[in-house]
Amino acid sequence: MAERFDLVVRDGTVVTPSGPAAVDIGIRSGKIAALGNLGGAAAAATLDATGLHVLPGVIDTQVHFREPGMEHKEDIAHGSKAAVMGGVTAFFEMPNTSPLTLGKADLEDKLARSAGRAWCDHAYFVGGSEDNVADLAELERLPGCAGVKVFMGSSTGSLLADKDELLARILANGRRRVAVHAEDEDRLKERQHIAKEAGHPRAHPVWRDEEAALRATKRIVNLATTAGRPVHVLHITSAEELEFLEQHKDVATVETTLNHLTMAAPECYERLGSKAQMNPPVREERHRDALWRAIADGTIDVIGSDHAPHTLEEKQRPYPSSPSGMPGVQTVLPLLLDHMSKGRLSLARLVDLTSDGPHRIYGIAGKGRIAMGWDADLALVDLKAEREITDDWIASKCGWTPFAGTRVTGWPIATVVRGHLVMKDDEVLGLPVGEPVRFWSTL
Image 1 (cartoon, rainbow, N blue to C red):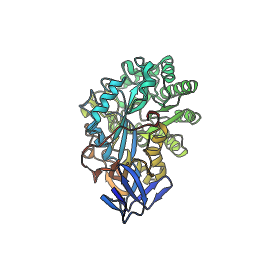
Image 2: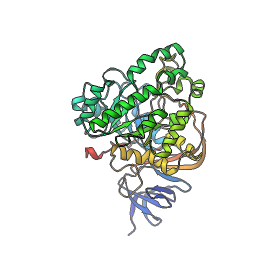
Image 3: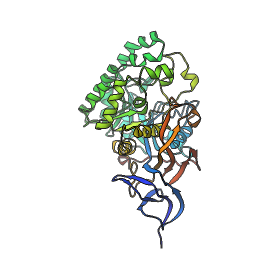
Image 4: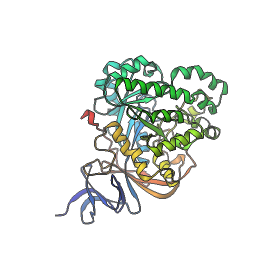
């Protein structure tokens, strides 16, 4: 009797760990159960991938979905819908919500809010702070916890951890890799007058200069080395940081964002104003060039969106009272595919940065590659499709993107989350199916 599957993805070019292959994918109970010629197999449903490449679903390990407390600009339902529209099958969400995610009850509240509302799989960071430092080793092992996130700058209240003594205590309490926003708070305070006097976002990378980033990155890497604790340095922006980090890959993994790989100062601030404002800032072309070199040489391990939406009304406040951050979870894959079409990276490197890299860095169980027994998380893409990114396409609650009007080559055509077809041809299908991501350290 022929094998029977819940879903068969037929006739696509499948990007496997061994490279692209013309194979079908048989999916059963949310897992990849067969790879090969499945022309004779029975299936409850089939998905025609003719002319498409089938990639592992994108794992976006840095998003801000603003819930609870700031649902007027984003929430889990809209943010995760935007994710699957862009080929993202799992997200890790940050702790700077209201209330902050500092304890077990806060984490469980986010997981409860996600049940039946998140369109893809998910995990939530707890913030490392003076208030919970003694509990971090226990908190990081809770189901659905992505790990500990530390803000060395650009945060408020108890979530700010800018002193070396507190950072050392945080690093001493636990074992999992700690995610870090590295900007030096003292230097930011010293130089804030630059932003106030300029009154325009073009001053953002002058105020929050590369020295502020480099100081904090050096501090956290040195503290992590002393503690014997791995760290993941988020949204790296500068050539100077990369030069330092490439010498410390034994302790630090590295993330950058599509914003920093795609935009450059001062042009983006003149064209977009505060829509291009984020922390750490988009910098000049020499830094962007250094980021692309670090993509090529392997210094950068992963790409996150740093999806951090605000309403247009909020963004229109006079700088520097305008908030930092922009939406991005939906545009990661289209922009990366376009960069690939221009020869800036290979398809294998794209998959490593968006799927296998997150799996390695965070110890994700069963996600990040198309292989037997792994979760059937897939992004079907048309490498030749020419599209324009528009505000109307954006599913985030904020309803805008800094990349509106950008024409790209390469587009997500369908998204499959654990065997469920959740997006096809720019339409979200069915009901939200997201479940908590599992980690080897918490099983």
